Length: 113
Image 1 (cartoon, rainbow, N blue to C red):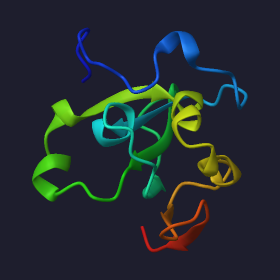
Image 2 (cartoon, rainbow, N blue to C red; image 1 turned 120 degrees about the vertical axis):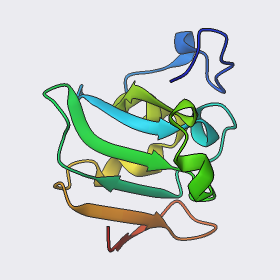
Image 3 (cartoon, rainbow, N blue to C red; image 1 turned 60 degrees about the vertical axis):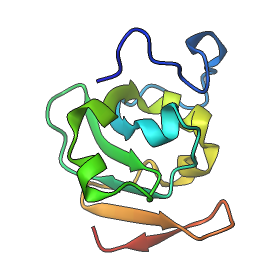
């Protein structure tokens, strides 16, 4: 979980509403703190009513990094859209889907989850 002294790449005061509310997601600090683009995204069955099921990674996280809960935090999906608007066209896809960024572009291709 992000602590209160976490320095986010985009301050909360600069987050704009890009999509209608759709619930929470999980994202790694590689995106929200280090400023990396989303490199891999997948949607699983939501954990609860507030959860959209979306999980966002930069794609360069090691398994060790991804296994550490302190490297992840919950955000409104809209917040991650502010970090990388290229994810928006895929957000209405169903649970069980995954997408990887086509390197050097703002395009994603569907992958096996």
